[in-house]
Length: 426
Image 1 (tube, rainbow, N blue to C red):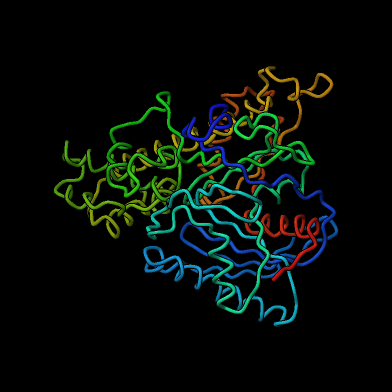
Image 2 (tube, helix red, strand yellow; image 1 turned 60 degrees about the vertical axis):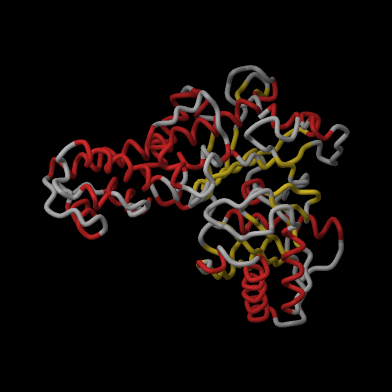
C-alpha cells in the first residue's frame, strides 16, 4: 500500500485516487438516481435520502447481454443510457431534474470526481479500443444520444459513512473483489501538494490485482490463471471472488479423478472449465442432510457424475469447504492490511488507532453476493479476523453488510457533490 501511494506502478496495488474527499455526513436530503455497471448485472436505482435514512425506492436489475460484454463501447453505454432514460421517465417524467451517481466497477484512473480513463477490463469484459478512454465521457455521449444530459459522480464507501462516521473502508466480495478506504492526503506521496478540505481522500486500492511472494499460490491457482483471458492479472481476485471459487474446486476434483478411482469412470466429466459454479459450491458446502442428497443431485445433474457413494460426497464437501475457507481467510487478511495501514489493528504503530487509551471503534462496509449470501464464508472471515487481530481488537471492528451499497452510495455522493457544485443534473 505504501509503495502504491508513493508512485504509479510502484506496487501491484494501484492505489488510485478517486477525488472523493467529501463523504456524506448524515444530513443530506433529496431524491437521486444511481447506475451501477460491472460484473454480470447492470442496476439502476432511485434513492431517497432524508431524516438519517437511505431508502432505495425502486431498482431495476438486468443481466448484461453476452454480446455487449464483447461488443463495442457505444453498444454497451447505449444499453445503459436507454435503460436509465426509460427508468427516469417512468419515475419522474421528462421535466424533473435529478443528480446521478455512476459506479463503474473496473480499474479507472480518475482525473476528477467525475472523469477517469479505463486502465483495463476485468470480469470477462473484452471490449476493444476503450482502454485509456474517459468512461464518464462515454456515458455522457450515450446519454446525449438518448436525449438525456447528465452530471455524473463516481463514489463508494458513502453509504456506510452516512450511517456511521466510524466507517473507514469498504470491501466488495462478490463476483469480483476490491477495496477502498479513507487515506490522509499527506500520505499520498505520488501527488505532492494535494489539498482537500477534509485532509483525506478515498483511495481505490484495486486489491484484486494484489500479488506477493508471501501470497501462497497452489498448482490449482496456476492452472486457473492459465485458463483465463487476463493471465497474470487479478491474482488476489482469482483466489477470493465468486467468479473463480467453483472453478478452483473443480480443478482439485479433476486432479483427484485423474489420480484415483474416487469418481469411477467420470474423470472426463470434470475436465470442462467452469462447470462447477460458485453458487453450486456454496450449495454443496451448505448441505447438512445425513446422506448429502443435494451433493448427489449436483454431482449428477451438473457434473454428470452418477452413483457416488457417501464417502465420495463427503470428500467433495470437504474440498468445497477448504476452497471457501481459504478465500475467506485471504479476504480477512486484506481487511487487516487496511486496518494496519490506518493504525487500527491494535499494533500501536499509529496513535490514531487509540482514543484516550482505548482502542477506537472501526467499521468496514462490505457488499457483494458472496459475502451476503454465503453464511459459511462470513463465518470463516470473522474467525480469521479474531485469529489475526486477537479478541480484544476484533471486538472493536464491525463488518457492516450494505445491500445496494455501491449504488446507493453513488447516489449519496451525487447528493454531496451536486450540492457543493450547484450545476446541472439529469
